[in-house]
Amino acid sequence: MSDHKRDDGILFHWKSLLACLVVSMCQFQFGLDATLIGGFQAMPGFLEVALQPYDKGQEAYTYLNWYNISTVRQQLISSLMTLGAFLTSPSAGLLTKIIGRTTALRIGCILCLVGDVIMMTTSSIGALYVGRFIMGVSNALFSVFGLLYIQVYLHQSMPEASTHGFIGMCASKV
Image 1 (cartoon, rainbow, N blue to C red):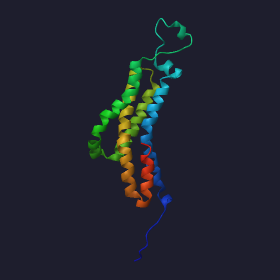
Image 2: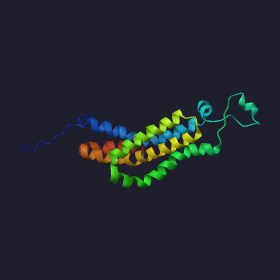
Image 3: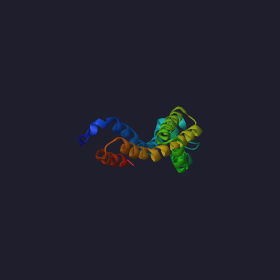
Image 4: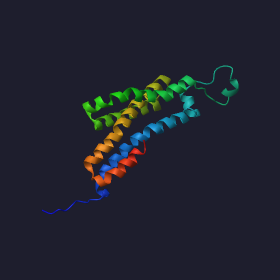
């Protein structure tokens, strides 16, 4: 028997690296969504579809097609995603025990798509709220299971010398 140590190099594990790179975007998604929603609330195109013109007494602004969004609605649009994540996160351990990390990430992806489709296709503020809450649930699943998946998957599928740098790179996106 030879005492040959197998050294395949990092490119040999390209599928593992690709999977972990995609999953590492889970951490990026929350920040991107939270940042973009503030910009959308100031865009005339979004306001024209989702909201009403300024109230009476502000006729000077209506000819410019400016639209009004109340502060309560702004806060709800921004906060419902965080509320969904806050309410979902405590059940993460139980969910892992029942369905596993990979299935939880898949459910998170499906919920993310559902929430996005609801928000993109509606002109109702109530449906927008529901879409934001669903996005919060998916973000909780992404945040909790994304990094766990990367850590466990890399340690199971790659040599130890290759894992530490990649875990650090993925964790730095948090």
